[in-house]
Length: 378
Ligand SMILES: *Cc1c(COP(=O)(O)O)cnc(C)c1O
Image (cartoon, rainbow, N blue to C red):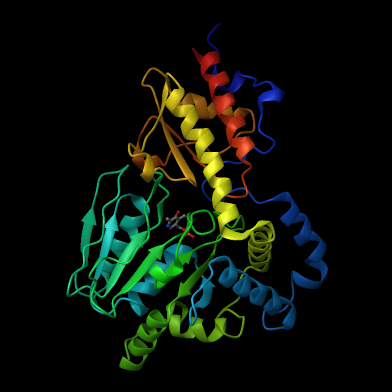
């Protein structure tokens, strides 16, 4: 076959996935959810977030998440504006007592560590790091009052099991960045005190919002720091967010379309069988992707240990003889979007989301498209 320039490669329609969105966030939004939003729009979009119409959607969302994660008694669903990045600042003000420990194994996990390190009111955090493509484990310390874990490191495609560190001192908290994991990976919420995320990944909505599932111990921490008088900017104040969430509101104006799509996705998961169903769907996608890569002469999973390979974000290295940039360019020219690797990882790699909204059969189709493109390029 003759060599072609990437953008001129035409993938046969019969090979193409039904939906070409494989980005890790913003990620595929189900067309059915968009239609439901359009149908609900006249009485919903452009209405007050302090009135029953919008508050009922927030209420459905909070109740739906509580069911989806099978929250233990006393856990509360809290939400606010600003996305997961903003929640790191919230946690730095309202959840870390004096000192946190951070497991750093990629771009996202490093950012919370940096935020805690920069906070003048906290002791320097402990950072436990491992190289990209692996994950470290937490270590119990007498002087650490918050353990910061990341369920799925979106920049590398590594997932880690979520459990309280053995022998962690009583009263210490476990805070988990679950932005790309929540809704796609199984979790025992009882092993966490703040399981937080944003809705543009497994929840197939838009960005700009954060949600935290808070344990009674986390709520106590918030109350105690509030009583102790630590200064907190109001927009980052978890105490204020808690009070508003209990009324099915946010402190300031939220994006209503985001809330609607988020609630719709949670209810879609629940109607199909809940978190176990959603996670099984991601398992199937992962089987297709990693199975293909392992049997391919030129592709291989970036994450060496199968147990650490994420079922929601797949990273696939390509042989040095193939230019991954040309592959992603050809895919993009055929409507298959956002398969580029995380830029700072700097590898000859494809990265794609396998979130619950993405049909596993589309992941299988994508692997056949990659084979077609590589044959055409060689
Ligand atoms: C996407 C992502 C974030 C950032 O989320 P924003 O809502 O854009 O702030 C943080 N952590 C992880 C693990 C992510 O995947």
